[in-house]
Length: 145
Length: 279
Image (cartoon, rainbow over all chains, first blue to last red; front, side, top):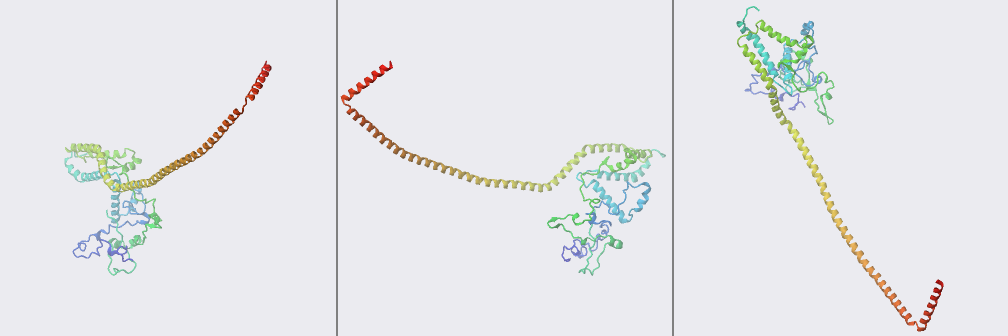
């Protein structure tokens, strides 16, 4: 039964399987960068579809921890120590941040251009703080403030 | 972004490719001990969508599904609320308990004033341009923003409606066709009514003719009977008149002159008596 082309255990027929594509002229033989991207193409560790349902990339599926707004000032070092600071954890946090932003401003029935404005403002601030301010220091009106 | 692809499936029996070296992912090599514990093996899940004719939902298949903490996905109606077109409201809510309503406002205006006073924001000759640009942008966005948004959303809704209207139109057409079929069925019934009406008319005509002929028969019989009655009456009448005339003639003939004198004398005597009595 596993020999059917549609069987889940028959990996030979899955489209895009590099083992199946044997042509020498196919760049997949010598330029297969997807093998390095498989690292990023995995579910988080605490995800179980039987409990959590379909995968939502904006959710954290690990152990439930305090929101940054609820943590007290004295507990901040302990809170930071509890976070997953591996490269994979940081990567997944970044993915979650992006998807939260997407869901907040783009994944709705009445979108507007606030997402664009926010990106514009952040980019402007970065430019101002790191590039324009050092330039402007030459044009200061006073030496001591 | 990147969507998940399943782990390489673990075949539990000898497969034609089991002799080759299966390429595991790098994460499996790095987290070899951990991933075998936490990895979810989805190949053993039986994906039933129907059972006994009823549609199965995930909460029917997986009783351990946590719908309270992980509710199903719902498309949001509106984006997060925002102040000054770039600062989210959640920041204002977060600082409300600690600083009150004017907290974030004071923070941002204070940053501005700090920048001016410490000359992090240098007031050079292009500052006027930036000021006027800000005012112009704010005015334009406030005046034209909602209109432009509604226009774009209208165009988008038209495109979405082109897909959704297919189903609505087919439903409407189906309803209209059903109405037409029902109407034709009623018309079919009304045809039988017409036939019945025609039958009734014919029956009424037949009844009228029957009654007409009954009347004719009655009149004919009555005529014959009246004739017989009139005949008998005429016979009787003739006999009576003949007898009366014969009897009176005979009596008149038999009256002698002596009898006539006698009767006259008796009548006169009676009259004298009455005259003497009545006085």
